[in-house]
Structure formats: structure tokens, C-alpha cells
Image: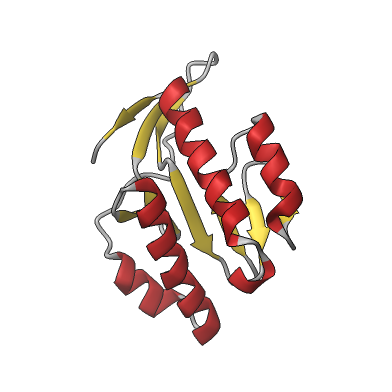
Length: 143
């Protein structure tokens, strides 16, 4: 079975932001997302793989036998857009998307260009709903 690429690393989050994120506004937005996600989740930011900043940790196992660990919440300041890993497919989350603002939905994440494009109250609902979903359906562990 293939090894997961997205695993916890010991890279410092601040070092990653300083070295990877070139645009000043994206750096400021990254720092604000870190502050918000940490506040909403209660978890410290940690690097997952080379470019994902994650908060908390849970273990999953699919019916296929594939299993691994993942952050409960996370984001990545990609070159073009932010990838937000905060969505769980619940009624409350789907309702929050209506008020989120300017975004695109991927298979496993929400893409935004900058924080000012979205409603932070709707993002908070998405994050808190995702935390509840993960805690109800998976084993939450600590790093």
C-alpha cells in the first residue's frame, strides 16, 4: 500500500510561511488564518507534508483498508489560491457555504484567493462543524 504524503513533519510553521509564501498579503492572510484556526480548534498549528498547516489530528480508515492520519482543520497558502481543508458534508456546512462569499469548491477543499473575499463568520461555522464531524466519526489523537 502506498505511503501517505500528507504526514506530520517537524518543520516550523513560521519558517514555512517565511520561506514559501512570497506575497506579503498572502503572508498576512496566512497568519490570520493560523490565528483563527488555532482559536476555533484549540490546537497549535503544525506542518503536514511540505505545504499544509494543520490543526489537531485524527486517524481514519476506509473500507478499502487504506488508513492514515490527517489534521482536523488545515490550509495551504498555494501560489494561486488558498486551499482550505475545513469542509464536512453536513447540512449545517452546506448552509454555511451559502454565506461564505467568493470561493470555489474542490473535491476535498475550498479554494479562496484572499480572506477579504469571504465571510469569516461562515468560515467559523464550517470549521467548527468540521471539528464536530471529525470527533463524532473518527479517533482524534494528539501529536
